Structure formats: C-alpha cells, structure tokens
Image (cartoon, rainbow, N blue to C red):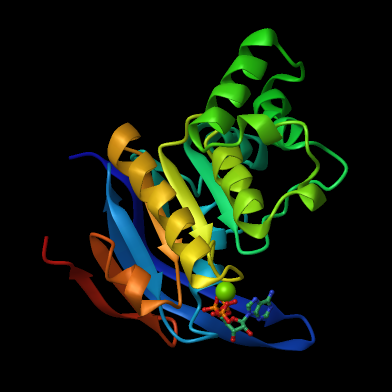
Length: 232
Ligand SMILES: Nc1ncnc2c1ncn2[C@@H]1O[C@H](COP(=O)(O)OP(=O)(O)OP(=O)(O)O)[C@@H](O)[C@H]1O
Ligand SMILES: [Mg+2]
C-alpha cells in the first residue's frame, strides 16, 4: 500500500528572538497508508493542531522530513507547497470556516476555482453533485447562517473534497456538535473513506468516535504515546 503521508523525526519549536524557544513536538514518526481512517487523540496542549498544521503544509517543521505522496516537502518553495496542498489535501476545522457572505454552493466551489482562477460549468456540476451526496442539494443557495451546525459541517466536508484530495485532515470536526449530529458527521466521513478510498486523519476528544476508526494515534506532551490499530 502506498504512503499518503510520512513523518520522519519531526520536531517543532516556537519562540526565538526575545521569546524563549519551546519545543512542542519532540520527534514524531509515523506514516499514513492510502485508505486509512485514523483518529489523532491526546490531551489539550499535546500538539495535535500543531502536527495537523505541519501535515497540512501550513507550517514548516523545525527539524525532520515530511513526505506527501512519497515526495519530500522540505526542499519545496512556498508556491510548490501550495500546489501540493491543493492537489493532495483537504481540511475540515471545528468551526467550519465557511465564508459567511457566500452560499453553500459557492463555498464548495471556492477551492475549485482558487486553483484555476475561473469558474466553469463542470465545477458547478461537481459542487452540486457533492452537495446532493450529503443531502444538501435543496440548501445549495443558502448562506451558512441559514444552515444548522451539522449542515454547515457537511458543507465543510464537501468543500474539503472539492479537489478530490487523497488525504483529509480534520481538526475536531465534530467538537461543537451535539452527540447525534456528531455521529452523523462522523458517519459521513467514514462513508466517503469507504466509498472513495480517501484517507482521513481526524483529531477528536471523543473516545467513542476514536474507537470507531481503524487506528488511534495518541499524542502526549509532543510525543506519540500509543499508535494502535483497532480490532476489526
Ligand atoms: N504559534 C505558537 N507559538 C507558541 N506556542 C504555540 C504556538 N502554537 C501552539 N503552541 C503551543 O504548542 C503546544 C501544543 O499546542 P496545540 O494547539 O498543538 O495543542 P492541541 O493538542 O491541539 O490542543 P487542543 O486539544 O487544546 O486543541 C501548546 O503548549 C501551545 O501553547
Ligand atoms: Mg488543537
């Protein structure tokens, strides 16, 4: 099975200048295989979001190498990193980050034409197809504020899929939802994983949801404490 992503001895430090240097990730090694559905768990402050930002090429590690689709990312310049991110990665955040002035449909279209600079009929068809798939076709023209929290999060998941990513990175995607809605949103990610083979790495505080993944990577104080494949 191909590696979608590989971390080799990743360290991350913050500070410098006048501020003291603090290391928050102390040498992280793991790889994600094509099609895996993985939970990233750990106490608040353990470094989960920091790790996600590195994997998402939003920040650079202080040391170590990060490979995406078997390609080392440290030699790449910012434009090349952006291109790799747009091609391979999708993001979902706890607070959906939908653009409030735009409709559900336009939010889903955004990453598609961000890459190409123009909006095409094919993009519109794909956006509508994706919204249909999560039961939101009838809501395509509503603004985020006119949608429920669960509906907004489904739009955010569909938006993450806009450019057919190989890997979706989700930081507490169900964190601000009630437990039934959280279950539905989680189930949606699971079905996309199973039907399309998209790899997911999901940060969650919910042990119930973590238990429903294939694998749980547990981070404590910037180090991997456990990396367990769940029994099927
Ligand atoms: N830009 C930054 N500058 C300095 N320190 C930072 C920065 N970002 C994060 N940290 C520190 O790194 C550590 C890990 O933070 P991170 O946000 O990755 O934790 P987390 O596991 O996502 O926590 P939570 O579950 O609360 O979201 C914390 O001690 C935090 O204060
Ligand atoms: Mg976090």
